[in-house]
Amino acid sequence: MVKALNGRLHVVDQRSKAAYYLHALRWFSAFYVMIYHLRPVLFKGYEQLEQKSLLVKGLYAATSIGNEFVMLFFVLSGYLIAGSVLRSVAAGTWSWKTYLLNRVTRLWVVLFASLLLTYVWARAQLFLFPQYDRFSDSLGWLDFVGNLLFLQGLVVPNYGENIPLWSLCYEFWYYMIFPCLILAFVANRIWKRVVYGAAFLVMAVLLGKAIMLYFLIWLLGAALVLVPAPRISERLLTRVAVPAAGCVSAVLLVAGKAVAGANEHAAGLAGFLAVWFISVGFAALIYAILHGYKRQASVQEVKRLHVHVVLAGFSYTLYLTHYPIVNFVRVWLGDGKWGSWNPDLPHLLLAVVIAIAICVYAWLLSLITEAKTAEFRNFAKKLLDAPFRGKKSAFDAKGHHIQGS
Image (cartoon, rainbow, N blue to C red):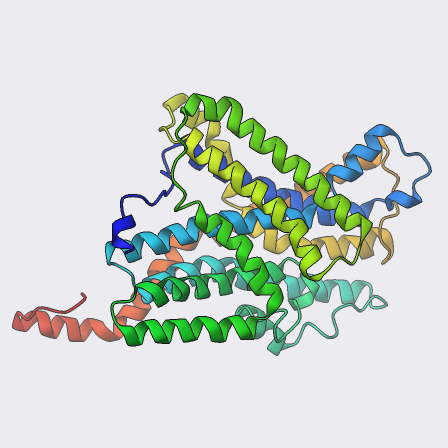
């Protein structure tokens, strides 16, 4: 069944303009989440402001939808990871070893450094400002290991109150349950289908309602791999569909925020539906981009669009490492309180400087982590292959065929 889809799976060509625009969505989302966390730490809450000009209203509204932008991460992840899974299953080359090696090294290279730096920033804050102890229940070794095993929010708290870590837990377990879901239908043995189906159900129960609800958002991205291309010209897609999808996403973001504002503690199905429709808008935007810009980028376009590759190259690092600094800034500048600045020009400029400094910090860190992912992956592969290398050589010496080598 899946093999029949082999030629129909839509996986983005890395040479296409669409690939560059997906990079743009990645880095913009990470940067936006950082701004979303930084703004209330630096500036007064909207209700505390004495002067509320139209510009100030726009700035506050435009920096208040960070949680919703995490859904864009989920949709993008669903598209990219599901594409790799379905493509390898359809080609008959699926391997849990290869898949886990790729996924875990991608996550761990930055996560391990992020957890260490979270500890450093927390200890520095406790040393300089001992009266603001926010970390007594989240800096233990079990918390560290639990976060490294993607159990934050399930068994342990976010390490050192590094809030963005919650989404990493969700994403990792989506990486685990999606292949089980697919293999439960297409495995070549009945007993394997039963095992994969049981594994999916057990994980779904253990992960709980919230994580499984948001799995539906991740699956929106996965669906983009299977949805047929539209029967309209690329020109019409780029000139009409992409702007229209962008406008729809913006409207849904505003509407979703309005729903959340009307009920600050919206939870359960009502809260989920708000982000679901926002995610549908994101999926529509990505779909339009994928099919509207699928042609290969020209040399001039590559030069112009390469900035998105550079910025996306440290977006994951920025996402995981910015919050400990934000926490530190809150105590250092705000005396432990949320926002004390008025949104005047000098303070806005200072906020831009702080945001740029955080980005530079993340970029420098990414040079020894995120940018080295392939090297860490190759090293891990050699370690995993080492116990079998001698046996393989022995078999080769006898001229025997090695199954699966």
